[in-house]
Image (cartoon, rainbow, N blue to C red; front, side, top):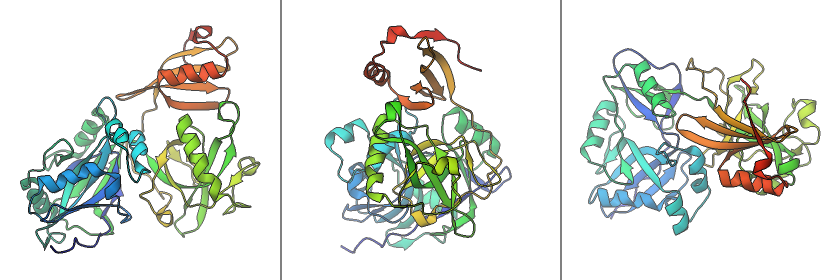
Amino acid sequence: MPPLPEPITPMLATSGDVPSGPGWAFEMKWDGIRALAYTDPGGTVRVYSRNRRDVTASYPELHALGVLLPGRGTVLDGEIVARDDAGVPSFDRLQDRMHVTTPTPGLLAAVPVCFHAFDLLALDGTDLTGRPYQQRRARLDELGLTGEVVSVPAAHAAAHGPAALRAAQAAGLEGVVAKQLDSPYEPGRRSRSWIKTPLVRTQEVLIIGYTHGTGRRAGTIGSLLLAAHDPTGRLAYCGHVGTGFSDATLRALHARLVPLHRAGPPLTGVPREHARGAIWVTPLLVGEVAYRTITTDGRLRHPVWRGLRPDRDPTDVRLHPTHPAVPAPPAPRIDGMMQTPDGRWQVHAVSFGHHRWYRVQYDDTITDKLHLTDVHRILADAGIAIDQLTETTPAA
Protein backbone atom coordinates (compact mmCIF):
# COMPACT_ATOMS: atom_id res chain seq x y z
CA MET A 1 0.00 0.00 0.00
CA PRO A 2 1.62 3.33 -1.03
CA PRO A 3 2.05 5.94 1.68
CA LEU A 4 -0.40 8.82 1.94
CA PRO A 5 0.77 12.01 0.19
CA GLU A 6 2.58 14.64 2.19
CA PRO A 7 0.15 17.21 3.64
CA ILE A 8 -0.16 20.37 1.58
CA THR A 9 -1.04 23.88 2.71
CA PRO A 10 -4.60 24.74 1.67
CA MET A 11 -5.57 27.53 -0.71
CA LEU A 12 -6.99 30.58 1.07
CA ALA A 13 -9.69 33.10 0.15
CA THR A 14 -9.29 36.87 0.02
CA SER A 15 -11.78 39.08 1.90
CA GLY A 16 -13.90 41.27 -0.32
CA ASP A 17 -17.31 42.32 -1.55
CA VAL A 18 -19.53 39.50 -2.72
CA PRO A 19 -19.24 39.20 -6.54
CA SER A 20 -22.41 39.66 -8.56
CA GLY A 21 -21.37 38.83 -12.15
CA PRO A 22 -21.24 35.50 -14.03
CA GLY A 23 -18.50 32.91 -13.69
CA TRP A 24 -18.76 32.37 -9.93
CA ALA A 25 -20.09 29.64 -7.65
CA PHE A 26 -21.16 30.44 -4.09
CA GLU A 27 -20.58 28.24 -1.05
CA MET A 28 -21.63 28.88 2.53
CA LYS A 29 -19.05 29.68 5.22
CA TRP A 30 -19.43 27.15 8.02
CA ASP A 31 -17.79 28.70 11.10
CA GLY A 32 -15.57 25.70 11.74
CA ILE A 33 -11.90 24.87 11.22
CA ARG A 34 -10.23 24.09 7.92
CA ALA A 35 -9.02 20.53 7.36
CA LEU A 36 -7.49 18.43 4.61
CA ALA A 37 -8.53 14.77 4.70
CA TYR A 38 -6.47 12.05 2.99
CA THR A 39 -7.80 8.56 2.30
CA ASP A 40 -6.00 5.61 0.72
CA PRO A 41 -7.44 2.47 -0.99
CA GLY A 42 -6.96 0.48 2.19
CA GLY A 43 -9.32 2.73 4.17
CA THR A 44 -6.65 4.66 6.10
CA VAL A 45 -7.63 8.24 6.88
CA ARG A 46 -5.37 11.12 7.88
CA VAL A 47 -6.63 14.58 8.76
CA TYR A 48 -4.44 17.71 8.79
CA SER A 49 -5.16 21.23 10.01
CA ARG A 50 -4.56 24.39 8.00
CA ASN A 51 -1.03 24.59 9.39
CA ARG A 52 -0.38 20.93 8.42
CA ARG A 53 -0.67 19.54 11.95
CA ASP A 54 -1.93 15.95 12.15
CA VAL A 55 -5.29 16.11 13.98
CA THR A 56 -6.55 12.65 13.02
CA ALA A 57 -6.75 11.47 16.65
CA SER A 58 -8.69 14.58 17.67
CA TYR A 59 -11.54 13.85 15.25
CA PRO A 60 -12.06 10.07 15.09
CA GLU A 61 -15.50 10.62 13.52
CA LEU A 62 -13.73 11.39 10.24
CA HIS A 63 -12.64 7.76 9.88
CA ALA A 64 -16.09 7.46 8.28
CA LEU A 65 -14.39 8.73 5.11
CA GLY A 66 -12.53 5.43 4.80
CA VAL A 67 -15.84 3.58 4.89
CA LEU A 68 -17.50 5.91 2.37
CA LEU A 69 -14.55 5.73 -0.04
CA PRO A 70 -13.58 2.02 -0.19
CA GLY A 71 -10.69 1.39 -2.55
CA ARG A 72 -10.27 5.08 -3.37
CA GLY A 73 -7.33 7.38 -2.75
CA THR A 74 -8.43 10.98 -2.25
CA VAL A 75 -7.33 14.35 -0.91
CA LEU A 76 -10.32 16.38 0.26
CA ASP A 77 -10.42 20.01 1.35
CA GLY A 78 -13.16 20.96 3.76
CA GLU A 79 -14.31 22.21 7.15
CA ILE A 80 -14.77 20.48 10.50
CA VAL A 81 -17.96 21.80 12.11
CA ALA A 82 -19.83 21.41 15.41
CA ARG A 83 -23.48 22.41 15.66
CA ASP A 84 -25.45 23.97 18.47
CA ASP A 85 -28.80 22.71 19.78
CA ALA A 86 -30.60 24.51 16.94
CA GLY A 87 -28.45 22.77 14.34
CA VAL A 88 -26.49 25.93 13.44
CA PRO A 89 -22.67 25.71 13.12
CA SER A 90 -21.13 26.89 16.40
CA PHE A 91 -17.48 27.84 16.68
CA ASP A 92 -18.05 28.29 20.41
CA ARG A 93 -19.08 24.64 20.78
CA LEU A 94 -16.23 23.46 18.57
CA GLN A 95 -13.81 25.00 21.09
CA ASP A 96 -14.53 22.06 23.40
CA ARG A 97 -12.97 19.73 20.81
CA MET A 98 -10.18 21.82 19.31
CA HIS A 99 -7.73 21.43 22.20
CA VAL A 100 -8.34 17.74 22.93
CA THR A 101 -5.87 15.28 21.41
CA THR A 102 -7.74 12.13 22.46
CA PRO A 103 -11.44 12.86 23.09
CA THR A 104 -13.31 10.67 25.55
CA PRO A 105 -16.50 8.81 24.56
CA GLY A 106 -18.42 11.33 26.69
CA LEU A 107 -16.97 14.29 24.81
CA LEU A 108 -17.58 12.65 21.44
CA ALA A 109 -21.23 12.20 22.41
CA ALA A 110 -21.61 15.70 23.86
CA VAL A 111 -19.86 17.58 21.02
CA PRO A 112 -20.03 15.55 17.80
CA VAL A 113 -18.44 17.02 14.69
CA CYS A 114 -19.03 16.61 10.97
CA PHE A 115 -16.90 17.21 7.89
CA HIS A 116 -18.13 19.39 5.02
CA ALA A 117 -16.03 18.55 1.94
CA PHE A 118 -15.94 21.36 -0.62
CA ASP A 119 -13.02 20.49 -2.92
CA LEU A 120 -11.28 17.42 -4.36
CA LEU A 121 -7.52 17.87 -4.84
CA ALA A 122 -6.49 14.34 -5.84
CA LEU A 123 -8.28 11.16 -6.86
CA ASP A 124 -6.73 7.69 -7.20
CA GLY A 125 -3.24 9.10 -7.64
CA THR A 126 -4.22 11.86 -10.10
CA ASP A 127 -3.47 15.45 -9.07
CA LEU A 128 -6.55 17.60 -9.75
CA THR A 129 -5.26 20.94 -8.42
CA GLY A 130 -4.49 22.28 -11.90
CA ARG A 131 -8.01 21.59 -13.17
CA PRO A 132 -10.80 24.20 -13.03
CA TYR A 133 -12.87 24.45 -9.88
CA GLN A 134 -16.00 23.44 -11.79
CA GLN A 135 -14.42 20.13 -12.85
CA ARG A 136 -13.08 19.40 -9.38
CA ARG A 137 -16.51 20.01 -7.85
CA ALA A 138 -18.15 17.72 -10.42
CA ARG A 139 -15.72 14.90 -9.53
CA LEU A 140 -16.35 15.54 -5.83
CA ASP A 141 -20.12 15.31 -6.31
CA GLU A 142 -19.67 12.00 -8.17
CA LEU A 143 -18.10 10.42 -5.07
CA GLY A 144 -21.50 10.40 -3.33
CA LEU A 145 -20.20 11.48 0.07
CA THR A 146 -23.36 11.50 2.14
CA GLY A 147 -23.67 10.31 5.70
CA GLU A 148 -24.18 11.34 9.28
CA VAL A 149 -20.64 12.69 9.58
CA VAL A 150 -19.60 13.59 6.02
CA SER A 151 -21.39 15.71 3.44
CA VAL A 152 -20.74 17.83 0.33
CA PRO A 153 -22.69 21.08 0.75
CA ALA A 154 -24.10 22.64 -2.39
CA ALA A 155 -22.15 25.07 -4.56
CA HIS A 156 -24.56 27.48 -6.24
CA ALA A 157 -23.15 28.25 -9.68
CA ALA A 158 -26.17 30.17 -10.98
CA ALA A 159 -26.82 32.21 -7.84
CA HIS A 160 -26.76 35.99 -7.56
CA GLY A 161 -24.03 36.93 -5.07
CA PRO A 162 -26.00 39.34 -2.84
CA ALA A 163 -28.91 36.87 -2.77
CA ALA A 164 -26.55 34.11 -1.63
CA LEU A 165 -25.31 36.38 1.16
CA ARG A 166 -28.89 37.10 2.28
CA ALA A 167 -29.61 33.36 2.29
CA ALA A 168 -26.57 32.77 4.51
CA GLN A 169 -27.76 35.45 6.92
CA ALA A 170 -31.28 33.99 7.07
CA ALA A 171 -29.81 30.56 7.90
CA GLY A 172 -27.65 31.99 10.70
CA LEU A 173 -24.43 31.11 8.85
CA GLU A 174 -21.09 32.91 8.85
CA GLY A 175 -21.18 34.26 5.29
CA VAL A 176 -20.33 33.07 1.77
CA VAL A 177 -17.26 32.16 -0.28
CA ALA A 178 -17.38 32.90 -4.01
CA LYS A 179 -15.14 30.78 -6.25
CA GLN A 180 -14.32 31.36 -9.91
CA LEU A 181 -15.56 28.42 -11.97
CA ASP A 182 -12.43 28.27 -14.14
CA SER A 183 -9.86 28.71 -11.34
CA PRO A 184 -7.21 26.10 -10.43
CA TYR A 185 -6.45 25.16 -6.83
CA GLU A 186 -3.42 27.12 -5.62
CA PRO A 187 -1.94 25.39 -2.53
CA GLY A 188 -0.67 27.77 0.12
CA ARG A 189 -1.78 30.90 -1.76
CA ARG A 190 -4.36 33.50 -0.74
CA SER A 191 -6.05 34.08 -4.07
CA ARG A 192 -8.53 36.52 -5.58
CA SER A 193 -10.09 33.52 -7.31
CA TRP A 194 -11.80 32.83 -3.99
CA ILE A 195 -13.57 35.77 -2.32
CA LYS A 196 -14.92 35.40 1.22
CA THR A 197 -17.61 37.77 2.46
CA PRO A 198 -18.36 37.30 6.17
CA LEU A 199 -21.54 38.50 7.85
CA VAL A 200 -19.63 38.96 11.09
CA ARG A 201 -16.18 40.54 10.94
CA THR A 202 -13.52 38.44 12.66
CA GLN A 203 -9.83 39.00 13.29
CA GLU A 204 -7.10 36.60 14.36
CA VAL A 205 -5.07 38.02 17.26
CA LEU A 206 -2.09 37.19 19.43
CA ILE A 207 -2.45 37.36 23.20
CA ILE A 208 0.34 39.57 24.57
CA GLY A 209 -0.93 39.96 28.14
CA TYR A 210 -3.92 40.18 30.43
CA THR A 211 -5.28 42.04 33.41
CA HIS A 212 -6.33 40.46 36.71
CA GLY A 213 -10.04 39.84 37.10
CA THR A 214 -12.12 41.31 39.90
CA GLY A 215 -15.44 40.32 41.42
CA ARG A 216 -16.68 37.13 39.74
CA ARG A 217 -13.42 36.91 37.78
CA ALA A 218 -11.11 37.19 40.78
CA GLY A 219 -8.21 34.79 40.37
CA THR A 220 -8.55 34.57 36.59
CA ILE A 221 -8.62 37.15 33.78
CA GLY A 222 -10.25 40.56 33.52
CA SER A 223 -9.38 41.24 29.88
CA LEU A 224 -6.88 40.09 27.27
CA LEU A 225 -4.41 42.44 25.59
CA LEU A 226 -4.13 41.76 21.88
CA ALA A 227 -1.74 42.31 18.99
CA ALA A 228 -1.27 41.39 15.33
CA HIS A 229 1.42 41.95 12.73
CA ASP A 230 1.04 45.11 10.66
CA PRO A 231 1.75 45.21 6.88
CA THR A 232 5.49 45.63 7.59
CA GLY A 233 5.56 42.49 9.76
CA ARG A 234 5.92 44.44 13.01
CA LEU A 235 3.90 43.24 16.02
CA ALA A 236 1.44 46.02 16.86
CA TYR A 237 -1.05 46.46 19.69
CA CYS A 238 -4.64 46.25 18.41
CA GLY A 239 -6.80 46.48 21.53
CA HIS A 240 -8.19 44.51 24.44
CA VAL A 241 -11.19 42.22 24.90
CA GLY A 242 -13.18 41.58 28.07
CA THR A 243 -16.42 40.00 26.81
CA GLY A 244 -17.41 36.68 25.26
CA PHE A 245 -15.88 34.47 27.98
CA SER A 246 -17.54 31.76 30.01
CA ASP A 247 -16.18 30.90 33.47
CA ALA A 248 -14.68 27.68 32.06
CA THR A 249 -13.01 29.60 29.23
CA LEU A 250 -11.46 32.07 31.67
CA ARG A 251 -10.03 29.27 33.82
CA ALA A 252 -8.65 27.40 30.82
CA LEU A 253 -7.09 30.54 29.33
CA HIS A 254 -5.49 31.51 32.63
CA ALA A 255 -3.95 28.04 32.98
CA ARG A 256 -2.47 28.27 29.47
CA LEU A 257 -1.15 31.81 29.91
CA VAL A 258 0.61 31.37 33.27
CA PRO A 259 3.52 29.33 31.77
CA LEU A 260 4.01 32.08 29.16
CA HIS A 261 4.61 34.91 31.67
CA ARG A 262 7.43 37.30 30.86
CA ALA A 263 8.92 40.34 32.59
CA GLY A 264 7.85 43.03 30.13
CA PRO A 265 5.67 43.66 27.08
CA PRO A 266 6.69 41.99 23.78
CA LEU A 267 6.08 45.26 21.92
CA THR A 268 5.80 49.00 22.37
CA GLY A 269 2.79 51.25 21.98
CA VAL A 270 0.37 49.76 24.53
CA PRO A 271 -1.67 52.64 26.01
CA ARG A 272 -0.73 53.44 29.59
CA GLU A 273 -4.23 52.80 30.92
CA HIS A 274 -4.14 49.25 29.53
CA ALA A 275 -0.50 48.52 30.34
CA ARG A 276 -0.91 49.52 33.99
CA GLY A 277 -1.01 46.35 36.09
CA ALA A 278 -0.86 44.05 33.04
CA ILE A 279 0.65 40.59 33.21
CA TRP A 280 2.70 40.12 30.03
CA VAL A 281 3.04 36.87 28.12
CA THR A 282 5.08 35.61 25.19
CA PRO A 283 2.77 35.93 22.15
CA LEU A 284 2.37 32.28 21.20
CA LEU A 285 -1.40 31.77 21.58
CA VAL A 286 -3.57 32.71 18.60
CA GLY A 287 -7.19 33.65 19.24
CA GLU A 288 -10.09 35.04 17.28
CA VAL A 289 -12.41 37.94 18.05
CA ALA A 290 -15.50 39.35 16.39
CA TYR A 291 -15.51 43.13 16.10
CA ARG A 292 -17.51 46.05 14.73
CA THR A 293 -14.82 48.15 13.03
CA ILE A 294 -11.07 48.81 13.00
CA THR A 295 -9.98 52.38 13.73
CA THR A 296 -7.51 54.27 11.54
CA ASP A 297 -4.78 53.58 14.11
CA GLY A 298 -5.39 49.81 13.97
CA ARG A 299 -7.53 49.29 17.09
CA LEU A 300 -10.42 46.84 17.22
CA ARG A 301 -13.70 48.44 18.31
CA HIS A 302 -16.17 46.40 20.40
CA PRO A 303 -14.29 43.10 20.15
CA VAL A 304 -15.90 39.92 21.51
CA TRP A 305 -13.83 36.81 22.23
CA ARG A 306 -14.63 33.78 20.03
CA GLY A 307 -11.92 31.35 21.08
CA LEU A 308 -8.38 30.08 20.57
CA ARG A 309 -7.18 29.05 17.11
CA PRO A 310 -4.61 26.24 17.52
CA ASP A 311 -4.87 25.69 13.75
CA ARG A 312 -3.21 29.07 13.10
CA ASP A 313 0.51 29.90 13.15
CA PRO A 314 1.43 32.98 15.27
CA THR A 315 3.66 34.32 12.48
CA ASP A 316 0.67 34.41 10.11
CA VAL A 317 -1.51 36.67 12.27
CA ARG A 318 -1.99 39.90 10.31
CA LEU A 319 -4.30 42.82 11.03
CA HIS A 320 -6.76 43.29 8.19
CA PRO A 321 -5.54 46.38 6.29
CA THR A 322 -9.09 47.04 5.09
CA HIS A 323 -12.44 45.45 5.69
CA PRO A 324 -14.82 44.52 2.90
CA ALA A 325 -18.12 46.31 2.46
CA VAL A 326 -20.22 43.64 4.13
CA PRO A 327 -23.52 44.29 5.88
CA ALA A 328 -22.90 45.74 9.33
CA PRO A 329 -22.99 42.76 11.70
CA PRO A 330 -26.12 42.92 13.81
CA ALA A 331 -25.56 43.21 17.53
CA PRO A 332 -26.96 40.53 19.87
CA ARG A 333 -30.41 41.54 21.08
CA ILE A 334 -31.34 41.80 24.76
CA ASP A 335 -34.82 40.26 24.97
CA GLY A 336 -35.24 40.68 28.72
CA MET A 337 -33.43 42.00 31.75
CA MET A 338 -33.52 41.62 35.55
CA GLN A 339 -31.41 43.38 38.14
CA THR A 340 -30.84 43.84 41.86
CA PRO A 341 -32.37 46.95 43.49
CA ASP A 342 -29.01 48.77 43.36
CA GLY A 343 -28.55 47.85 39.69
CA ARG A 344 -25.07 46.40 40.23
CA TRP A 345 -26.07 42.84 39.30
CA GLN A 346 -27.91 42.38 36.00
CA VAL A 347 -29.09 39.30 34.14
CA HIS A 348 -29.78 39.65 30.41
CA ALA A 349 -31.64 37.20 28.16
CA VAL A 350 -29.77 37.53 24.86
CA SER A 351 -30.44 36.32 21.31
CA PHE A 352 -28.51 36.45 18.07
CA GLY A 353 -30.05 34.74 15.05
CA HIS A 354 -30.90 31.19 16.15
CA HIS A 355 -28.73 31.44 19.26
CA ARG A 356 -30.13 32.08 22.77
CA TRP A 357 -28.16 32.53 25.98
CA TYR A 358 -27.86 34.49 29.25
CA ARG A 359 -25.40 37.16 30.30
CA VAL A 360 -24.55 38.23 33.86
CA GLN A 361 -23.10 41.68 34.48
CA TYR A 362 -21.66 42.85 37.79
CA ASP A 363 -20.64 46.52 37.54
CA ASP A 364 -18.30 46.47 34.49
CA THR A 365 -17.56 42.72 34.58
CA ILE A 366 -19.55 40.67 32.05
CA THR A 367 -19.82 36.87 31.94
CA ASP A 368 -21.38 35.80 28.66
CA LYS A 369 -22.78 32.72 26.85
CA LEU A 370 -24.37 31.19 29.97
CA HIS A 371 -27.08 28.60 30.52
CA LEU A 372 -29.78 29.35 33.09
CA THR A 373 -28.18 26.92 35.55
CA ASP A 374 -24.94 28.95 35.30
CA VAL A 375 -26.86 32.11 36.15
CA HIS A 376 -28.36 30.55 39.27
CA ARG A 377 -24.93 29.30 40.38
CA ILE A 378 -23.22 32.67 39.86
CA LEU A 379 -25.92 34.51 41.79
CA ALA A 380 -25.91 31.91 44.57
CA ASP A 381 -22.13 32.23 44.93
CA ALA A 382 -22.64 35.96 45.40
CA GLY A 383 -25.34 35.38 48.02
CA ILE A 384 -28.17 36.56 45.77
CA ALA A 385 -31.44 34.70 45.27
CA ILE A 386 -33.06 34.95 41.85
CA ASP A 387 -36.26 36.30 43.43
CA GLN A 388 -34.31 39.34 44.65
CA LEU A 389 -34.05 40.54 41.05
CA THR A 390 -36.77 42.59 39.43
CA GLU A 391 -37.60 42.86 35.76
CA THR A 392 -36.64 46.10 34.03
CA THR A 393 -36.63 47.46 30.49
CA PRO A 394 -33.31 47.01 28.64
CA ALA A 395 -31.64 50.20 27.49
CA ALA A 396 -32.32 50.96 23.82
